[in-house]
Image (cartoon, rainbow, N blue to C red):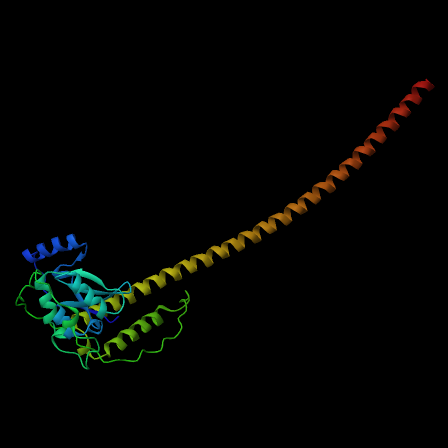
Length: 286
């Protein structure tokens, strides 16, 4: 969906109508939204024709979790059934105070009729209030804030397949890409968006660029540490291989010395035997 803009309802303390609406929401098991929580998507008027929104006193706020969200102040079953027939999909209803609903209906996006004739059947045939139904509260004067006008249909720009940024990609290129995206967003006519939202979006893009650059630097640092560790492991492996080769040479040398000692011991034993035999002959001669 398109970016959202704050509803034309200023922040204020909970009023008596807010308290009553909260109690009604609890009774009907609906979500209650206070004045400061209300936002309208720029394309919300496409979910329900502004004419029917004014007649039925129901304001579409946008899409949340794949479901259209519709704000009402009087959640009667006939009203909700009629809205379900007009809104595509399974709408999610939220309860607002009557004065908040009046302010939403007075916003420019719903105060002016959309181009083209509505194709839905007349609301009078769908929504008829019973005799015992409580009358809707009268509108409360509210200072109207600038609302987002309907944006002309724009063809989506082709999106190139993205790939994971490698650690070796310079941070300057990442910053340039983010700045290019910010420049492209700034090139869109400003009358399509609320000025505060455009400024906030620019700040978020700048913060995202800073965060991305910081993350890339961290990834580059981790990659450098990994490369250094791998080099150290390679050197240690080479040292271990050299130590193993030296150990093999030492073992071969020890075996050679042991064999030489064994031969010397054998010759010594033979010499001792010869001496003993000669000594025995000398004794016999005497």
